[in-house]
Length: 431
Ligand SMILES: *Cc1c(COP(=O)(O)O)cnc(C)c1O
Image (cartoon, helix red, strand yellow):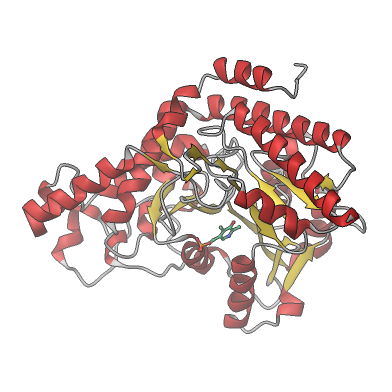
């Protein structure tokens, strides 16, 4: 399709948008009486209007039933989490028994590393991407220390080549082969939080297994954003948070995937708790742990129902929409944003560079833009003009045109505001 950088053209695309109605399902912060242009759904998704109903239901059941809500609530609390299995498994490409929800993301990665990072004297290394999300870096360091290894020795990072913004698949595969017999675990972010690069999960998982390692994925920026086939790709385990693309609210619960090939392996250690115990016998308070078969067997505590309620609202919305429709719009709106950026770039002196891969198979909802020169002033200009984006050192703003609620007209408006901001800055500089 040939795009045009005009309001009429953007409105025409909005008119043809199959997800158009969902924009009205979200609550937008206001700027001068208008919806903000929201580009940070990769950090904290907007609040869906239907979420409040799900939370109120729990509040009411708690008020009216108190402890009896565990069994007699409208959605009983004792197995509330099981409502996620069917819809969530579709979003990540798994069998229902392979997914569960609990805790928060970094906590779950630690818990699953208890099962899947089993270093030995000779095979103890963890392979990850250079500049992984800081929480993941701290997690790796603390895990290898816990097992008595040194960071420099046990953590292997795959680096970008000089002058390149993204990591090449061939370099990841070569590094896996090089570490070979010493490799215990590959754990990478499925979509890089900084550049928006999407990794080839299937190929990397296969290579990790060939080297004899376990392969897990941090899907914080991937869940609800990219097509996932975790079961078919033979991924050992994966975790994601629900507050980014999945709109479940600040700091909210995490989802986990554990491949069914591991469900009955009684040699796998795990840190257990009563919610992972045999469902029928959970309240018999027996001394010996008998895990539920499936991802639910990794549960620890009884679940924070008030947190799960917004996540359930979100998962049900995603299953209504389906990943296919989301991905179709995602590709088009991201391409349109890219086009608008290039048009503005032509109209003013070039001051920025898109560092996210151009190749659609290597990116999803996010474009990261490197601002040369005084990027921070431009960022401040955008924020004070109703464009919510975020700033990452040294000079990057990240733009996520989330398909569920961003419009093509937003992209056009953003382009105009960006242009004004750049022109104003150029004028200031020439004074
Ligand atoms: C957002 C994000 C996190 C955050 O972890 P929490 O435990 O939910 O605070 C971790 N890893 C990655 C890759 C992220 O993008």
